[in-house]
Length: 463
Image 1 (tube, rainbow, N blue to C red):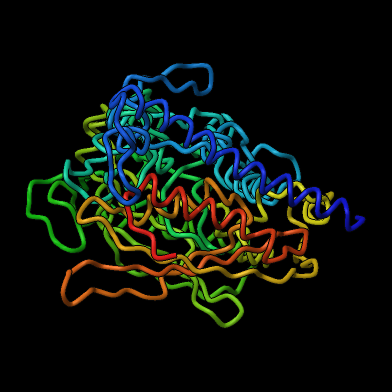
Image 2: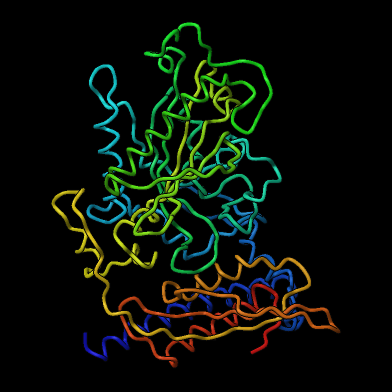
């Protein structure tokens, strides 16, 4: 591409970022004039009601998403950047690496697990709406009311009752309640997080659930007719209070065998696997699977025996089961050697063409393009006395800088001995996936980040 075209494209990106800030600014001016007409604006670094309102999502307004309208309130925190990703459905895009992983998992389950009439045992749901209720995302999964995973700083809320799902587990209860006992759910999920090559506010998960009746679990077991699924005992590290040890051990064995076969299908036979005990609110016992890939132990999925309270509440009182969840990006980055999670959203043919294969099981190793040089800028500011949420800052940087931002690192933290105010210094790494950026070009975006940080987060700039 000619140099003039490159400069033009970067300029367009910078202008777009500045327009986003200008829109926020215009909104603030309108709100400020209506709230305090005839008065001067408060100094930068303070947090007037208008700024507080804008940062929360303007209670009283509406957000349109996937053909529905949702009233905004003090919990609304969806950014324009994230809203633009809803409906992209990369897992449906043929020959996209996430689609390849999804199709490989589906093919494996369809071939390995067949029902009584020769049809696939597992149903697949890969087009469920990402908008769920907070009850679906948390309460149905037995997540306590004050559990840290509910924090506004970690999730994308449309309002207090609706949100973008943080995991595909949000659909578990509904599908169990509908009478299903073996299914896979695939979809985009949304979480506010740090900015680096491994994290993005939108990623894709694949969830698997299987329930067993007494007959199904003990079939083929010697004296299986005399064994029971349930008992009343005490909870221990290895079982729930309502499960018999025999039932729990068989479910755990089936779960680990199922997942071992799956990862062997994806990564190849002879894979070293280990299981690490962990905690999830909706399974017990719970495990993470790690694989030794190219000499490095990597965590690839979480799983466990489903909490019987969840299963019972969905109406399957006579069954016991397991569940697992994995990240499609995580598997694709390991399997295809993709170094940066932003690449999954690229429309560059140099990336996409590498995955146009005739067989979904064909071995593919991503061949990187030339890595363009980074442009690094720092930003320092004094934190407000309260209510500073680091993920708000990361979200703001993503909204303004878009995919020009490769990573953000907290490189210094300082507490003033006299004022007791705390200062943070962040290093922002800008790198275009397809072009060389100059410091001059990035400066406009970085200045927009500085301005918006002061205006919207109530910090005091040190720049």
